[in-house]
Image 1: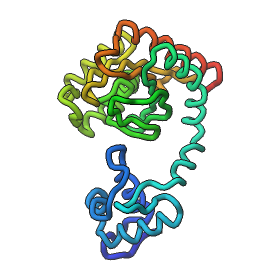
Image 2 (image 1 turned 60 degrees about the vertical axis):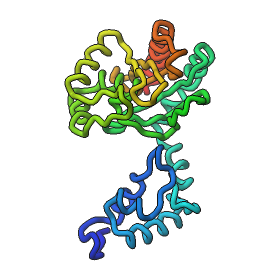
Image 3 (image 1 turned 120 degrees about the horizontal axis):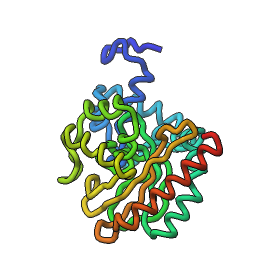
Image 4 (image 1 turned 90 degrees about the horizontal axis):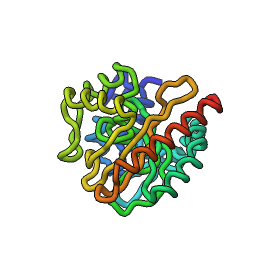
Length: 253
């Protein structure tokens, strides 16, 4: 259906609603009408009307401070077959890795040029904002970098063209340095995140391959920089990622 409203002729209602939903992220779980209008590029009157409609179908919820994503999105996300199957296959392996390392374990996939976390084990007292369904630019995380390293050149180029935002003083921000990092990752089979996404937090990540032997996910161990020793954590996450890759091949995932 195409809208005929003066504030956006030719733009579908679905596209407008999607723009509103895409405005939310892990740093902004609750957003007011004014900020939603700024992020989506839609007039406030349109935002107010669409938010009401999205609330009526449980895609958004009204709060005292604005709007937040609604429960139906979570329910739908749980039905996505690829991610659910991957997460289920990874669960016992992640539990073993968590038990062995006493650190926070992440499983993530690439969605375009961003990391999306599909399973996380272990609490966080580090001020780490990662959550299931959360997103971060792929170049700024261990799981993201390891997936970029084993993806096609077009995926890496898309990340570069989308920009390399600096999340901390240590984030890679130039194409030259990112390309060099990709070569280093492939040479050792794992990636390091040395406080590149969160100050004081580091991780080591390894690639997970599917039945077609193409990259499907990244698995990582994350913890305070002072307690994360790559010499011991690196082999642990590589072994776990290898076991998960073998499991996915066996199950045809």
